[in-house]
Image (cartoon, rainbow, N blue to C red; front, top):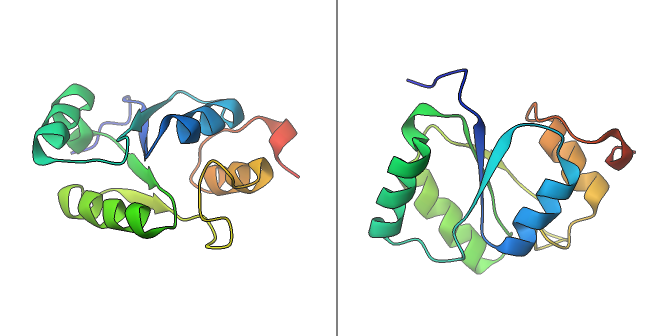
Length: 118
């Protein structure tokens, strides 16, 4: 059961992805990095620490082989999670134009700084 009073969680692969998103958002959201690896032990830690079963979870990973594999794994473990997909032309979250990320995040009801919306 998801609680409305808990912050949303965005799961990303790396620190540069996290930094890019933090720069754009103007909302109370927790951004969690997997650092590209996601074993069951690490998942259990994140599940407990961030109460992932009780929160709205968004998955935003690269559109490359590693990101697609991670998305598949996260989907199996967090079937209630919603997904944000970047266009394959950009390949990586960190290299996706800021205005594109802002639009994708706004479409998931995350407040973004108006400067990044074009």
